[in-house]
Image (tube, rainbow over all chains, first blue to last red; front, side, top):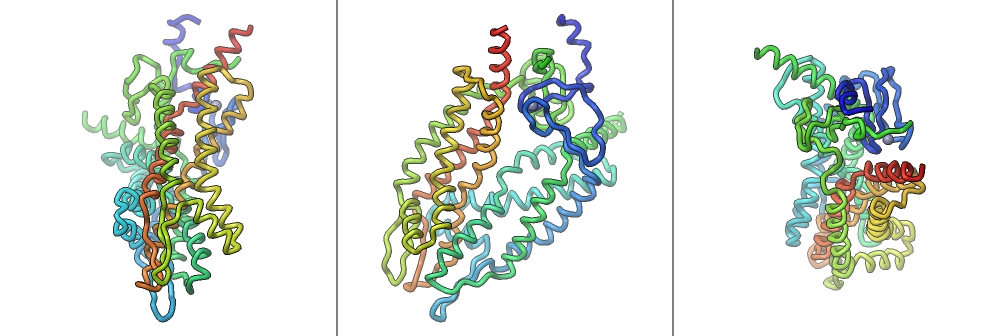
Length: 218
Length: 208
Ligand SMILES: [Zn+2]
């Protein structure tokens, strides 16, 4: 192979494994099938049935659950007539009051801001893609979503709640609140969204829509 | 015949996976606008630096107390390990194991795992490449779970505010621990797994 031959290669005809850089001939992946890299087994494409519709539905459900999960107490503690309840935000504030500003900022981000932002970005993205409506910042939204993905830590917060309950069993009576049930629902919808989101389909649609806006401007 | 895309002048966008011709380092992806690089620039240097920093943070994270649990005015600041021991004393073996795993074993395993991966690339330990990839995926996936103890401190500090009866406050160890977790997550992100396969191909070509 010479350099000139390489220039004739059309990049669109290939897949490149993002984990091991293997070059593969592109082929169509039928609905609901996955393609894995033959060398390192990482997922190349995971095609999902009705990915955009389902992502939108799950993200809306998640947004609805987000509010009770954050507004209602997750746990309440009763001891000798005294009681105290906890929401995600009061746990952030408790760290702030302990003068752990950086840590409270981190918990605020990973348990409130990032999960909310992820849901809003998904609703914006999937509704625009579903309606074939060219909109500004689509690729920015998708990029931000992907970057935020690993910084949302609601499921770990949940494990923290379980550990706290067990730690407090001896000390006082702990009762779960409405917030805890909403939080459970929110975590399930978040996990389902990440399995239903077909990254490649989203990016292809975004590309189509952005090309259309470019042509309209001309 | 296995060949890397780079050897044919193709690269892939790390953000949206669109393949493109490599023209020059730092060209922009025409779909999402991310700057494209053949490999993550200075991947090994950054990963080493972040790893050393997180290892350094693990010391204060484990030696300094992360919270003070006072009941009836009594109680001393406790480190992560003391918290685990307290759980054991209360016969909560399983939960003690969960906390021990998330806050002490996982961070250590992550650092050891990433060091092995870095040495794989630098020293050419490319036997069992598949095992190394599994190791990377594990390190990447498990990292976030170490935040568990920080959340426990946050939740306890919020809920246990019963005046003199019982109260919980967080201590500085929590900051060091959170920093260690974030630094290992960043270290895993800055490691480029494609370097392992580059080295693997390079060595197997040298053999033949
Ligand atoms: Zn691969």
